Length: 82
Image (cartoon, rainbow, N blue to C red; front, side, top):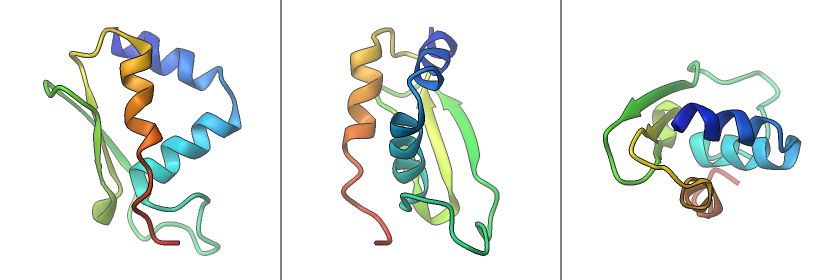
């Protein structure tokens, strides 16, 4: 189910992808000189998706079966570098 959710998210356009970038890295846009570390995606058996912004790691739950629950995690992007 997680892959179908990711496919749906990718089809929503830049606004959603920008939210995912901010959630995963803490930055709302790519830095001028790029990221010092390559972002990584990890799939885990956790209740909610999370991110480690210090190491640019996105942790996606493989247990989520509803797009609204998946999308809720990306609404919480108040922590960041800006």
